Amino acid sequence: MNFYEIKIFMNEVDHHPIYSSILALLEGKSKVSLKKSFENGFHLSVFGWFTQHEISNISAECTRLLLTHPTEKYDEEAFRVKYKKVAEVALKEKALEDIHQNKVLVARRADLFGFQNEEQLQIYIKINQIFDRWFRNRYWKKDNHILSITRDIIPFSAYLPDTVLSEEHALYSNGYVSHLSHYLGLLHSLNEKSKQAIIGKFEQAGEKDRESLMECMEKDNALTRELKVLFQDMEDAVQRDVLNFYSPHDDAHIETKVAASSSRHKAALGTPALSQLILKDSVLITNRWILNVLYEKLVLLNIKPLDKFYMNYLLSTIRFKKEEVYG
Image (cartoon, rainbow, N blue to C red):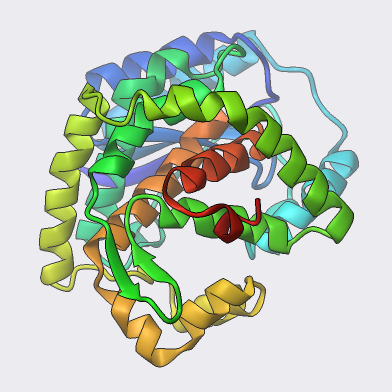
């Protein structure tokens, strides 16, 4: 059994027989998940451990369904223009060179899917499966709402230990600080007019949504229970040096990210003493890995990028003062 990735290049549509086929695969196969991406064209990526026989059958089935039900082709140059900035931010400029449509490509991934060791890859798959079990029946649907999703995850954010790592530099370890960092990262990328417009829009919506969110902080659900077990696994993995705060990225990637980040990020990641404080912080590491996967699932849930940042804003305001979230 080897690790494979099946890329199903198809235009974005509300309904397609391939969706049912993928959901059946997620329900019946362990150590398999999916995401949606723009690299080399709109596609669904199904990834995990398969036998050669399994991968051949899945590829043949997806190819048959695309031949029988091809999706409408889109303009490739317009696609490149639309995703140029996204590719640059993700450091994936080559992702727009070749564009595929209505095609299935299969690759055996001997590169550990970009991770540094197999245990990191297994952790990534485990997080994916936790979210798949919770969200898969909502994938591709148009009526998903970011407040509902935020209500689902806030019990785990509230559960994580809350520690002050550095009072002087306002450096915290808790279930909310990653959301604050990502929200501030958005504001840092905007001009002053756009920034104030976003702040005003989020503040207005947050007035009523925050109360609804507070009611869910102590509620228990299957998602929270699974994430609590994952946190224990992550603590153990950090102690065994399987991963740290920067995993799975190398120094060059980190330096590029720091250079383009907000002053808060630069202070935390660019100062050796502060960097050491977060290097093996299990809370920050767990939240970072969980959010990276959650963000991938939000795309499958048809959540718009701005709504994702609204989630970041909402959760930030639960823990941090108004001036800290630029509100």
